Length: 240
Image 1 (cartoon, rainbow, N blue to C red):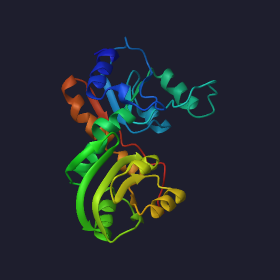
Image 2: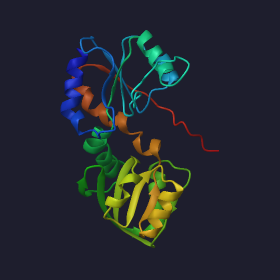
Image 3: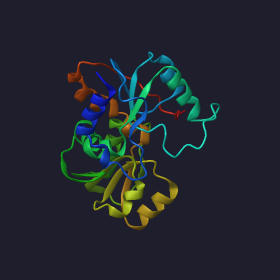
Image 4: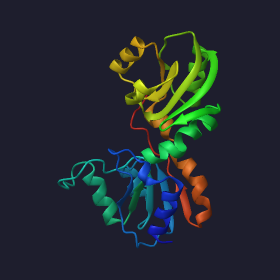
């Protein structure tokens, strides 16, 4: 199957035009005329993954390897060091980032991982009706995402309405219409802001909340007649 056909399928599934203006989803490395027989799905690109791939593989990732405009390719630095290896092995790369967050990832995490129905969704924010004790809910959340502990901003003893944004969603805080916000990468000043507006928060981790990307996309790619492999991307953080 031509890479162009796969790209068209992905664009129909989760339109690339939905991506944020600062994002860089789409075809990052490759040739639309290339014949593809093997697809590997991963959150990110790293050196160990590239080394394990066969020549001519299409790598579909959640995070774009190339985010900002590249003015040079110095092969001892990131991401040029990875791009050099990929070109040498004729590895193509398509990224599905903020478009896939909106169309698939948040909904899957809410329903399949946390087990709640979505009352409604606004762009990157999925809303859930919970009505549970905060401490018990926080422990349930940390268990669902495999977190070593629940990192929380607690503003009340009860969780009623929850907003969910996978990945790093603190920039959306001012748009949240809920009493608890689940997202990753919560920083100190984010927590201070949340406290001031009485918005409880639970940090669900960036990697931990997005690691389901590959298994979601795999479901949709099964009918294309391609060999599809899910890569076990490594979390760059180690908990000791």
